[in-house]
Image 1 (cartoon, one colour):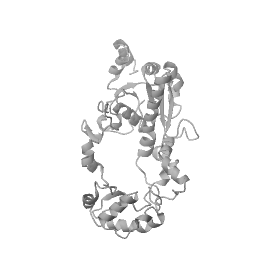
Image 2 (spheres, rainbow, N blue to C red):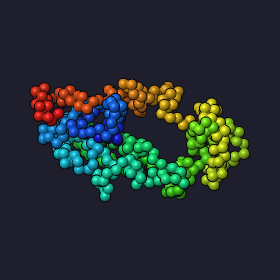
Image 3 (tube, rainbow, N blue to C red):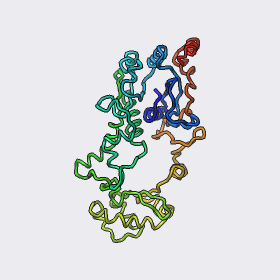
Length: 368
């Protein structure tokens, strides 16, 4: 069921891995982002599109006919919307007992916030994750919408759907997958919560091992105003860095002692400001110093490592990420560019066994 953000992203992931995915779009729906052409809507790539009047009785019947032959259904509406449309889990599973019904929301299907509006930033805020990101003397930054929408949301939905499909092959029974961005974001923070329980992580931003509190795990400005990412977490990696840059008076034995971090941070900041980003790359990139330049989107596409792995590809003139992860025998592939709304309506219905005269009747009735 067409939506925004994590639902389409999960569908894109499944399509990239070879799934046949049909995007069902409401006839009256307006796109939330006004792309000048469908080819720019990257997360809708790889699947065919059908438009249906979901509020028409024949539209409902048509969708249920598709459900009967589907392995899974993904939807990203607020709780209760699919039920009001007559397409809730009970109805769909009655039509197809082996169906996996994947549900993507921010707050989840239950809980006091379940029916409230929200976006990625709100969902990650209540998990503790947003509070943990950023500098101590400023509000938490807006970390794009990658954590809630795509990491804790779409990826977890795709994972849940695949798990349920595997189980359905054994049991012959479908089920509902309740994927909430709050749950998924919390799951992503597993290692941090373990460290916190052990007294190794505080609630104060930029004072911990992996949040910029340590001198050896942070981003630094260079002489040209560009930035580098430095992550020499292990003592032997930091020792190598010190050897390469001429820091001879630092006690490596005290590397993980937080009491030393505040005094060493200004020293490294001054050091990195002494050269341009390219000069640092010439000295450190490709070594075990755990170093990388901070690249913008255009630079990232041109980086030799990304080019060697074809991390970015071009589809219909649009640069976008390649399918991931990599497989040795059955590699993923983008099946087709993003479709125009309803571009494949007749083709899809025919593939689901609906006769041409029935399709014509549905169109004349305004159902499709």
